[in-house]
Length: 87
Image (cartoon, rainbow, N blue to C red; front, side):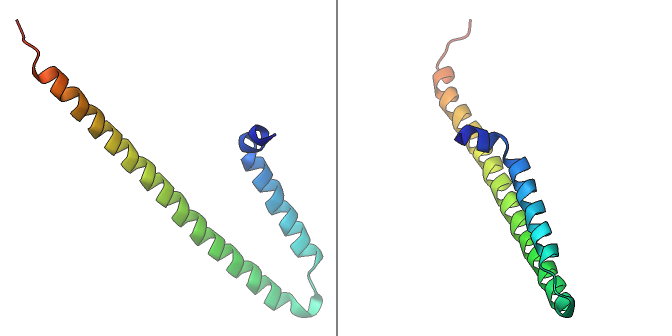
């Protein structure tokens, strides 16, 4: 079950977003349009900032991890090959 959720996380997120949008439209009140759309806009802007920041943060961590692992691998390989005789 958990594997299925991980495999289909994008579609589940999309369906949840569509469900939230349908609920938003269903609960609109004629006298509160300005306030409700203002809150809707602020919510999306805040979510956009959080998602962009977190995705950049995670990408930066993985890029740094790759650099550290490559450096460690080359430093571990160097001493073992430094004492080999050529010829």
